[in-house]
Every structure is written in structure tokens, then in C-alpha cells.
Length: 209
Image (cartoon, rainbow, N blue to C red; front, side, top):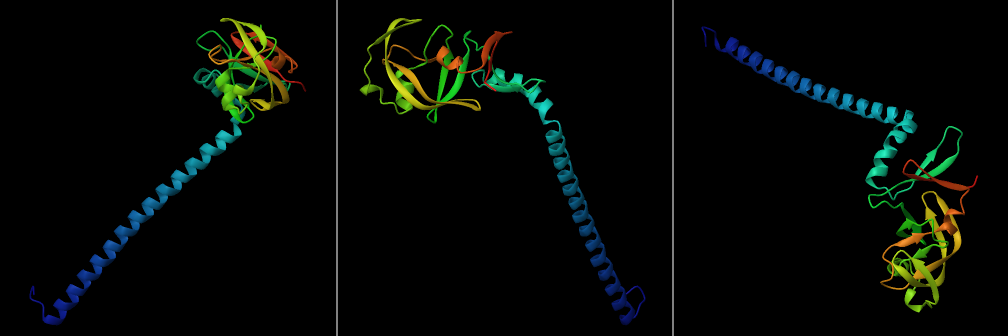
């Protein structure tokens, strides 16, 4: 082969095969090394983002609150002012009312905040979902609503949760079926807090302490 004897030809073939083997190994190692470096850089980037997010979590939450409030205006946002005073903030919904999501004995209920109502009342279906068995109650108390006169029954709930704050062992009214579509949150709940006010289209509720 190429004027070489058999022994030198065999040596040449061996050297060529060895070169191919080493070259392919280096190519494969380079690819693995490149992928490993990319993976390391990705994890370093993820860690850096998490670290920055944790470090600046307070201002980031302040920026996110208006967006979250627009997405779900009934979800109360907990805000802490520069003096360390915490408050719950609700944005006015598209229908012009303040709505608040609360939990009644573990059941999610959406209320319309009614500052003209002296007592909080549950719509029949909300009371049913909360396990109050509204079909067994006596509807003998007349009340005035936006839809006219209605009748409510007295009931008690173990716990009402609004955001991080809770009210235990609370008296509540239940409205007859088909007389009220949405539960109403009245002054008996608002007055449990230190203060509340409407400011710039927001309802601000300040808890005690």
C-alpha cells in the first residue's frame, strides 16, 4: 500500500484508527463539556433571579399589588405602611361595588360590602354551601334591601376569614331563597376593625393592633 510493506501498512492503519478514536473522543468530550457549562450557567441564572427576587420582595410586591387587584378586585390585599400599620385594601369592581372574598367556616364566599347594612347576611345558596342548612331556619325578620323588603333568619358561624384576619363565633343573617343573589357584608363586620374608609376608589380596612 503506497509502496509500504505489510508491516508499515498495518502500523499506518493502526495510527489512523487511533487518531479517529481520539478525535471522536475529544469531540464528544467537548460537546459534553459545552452542555455541562450551559447547564451550570442556566442554574446560576436561576439562582441569581431567585436571590434578587427574595432581596427585593417588598418593593416587587408593592408593584404587583395594583395588577393583582385589577385582576381580582374582590381579593383583599394586605398592605403595610411606612409606620408598620397593616391594612386590607379592596379596589372597586366594574359594577361600582366593593366586593370581598371571605371564607365562612372554610367555604369561599364573595360578599358585596354594604355600608348601609347593619348586619352581614348570607344569600341562601352561600349559606347552603357553608353548611348552615338554610331550609331548617325561620325567616321571620324583615329587612330592607336594594331589591325591596326581604326576610332573614338568624344563624351563627364559627369563623369568618378575610385575608389574614379572622372573626370567630359570629352572628349572621340568612336570606330566603331567590330574594338575594349575593351575600352582603355589613357594619357588624366593618366595626370589628379599628377603622375603615373609602379613598381614591379603594376601601381601606385597618384591623385592631
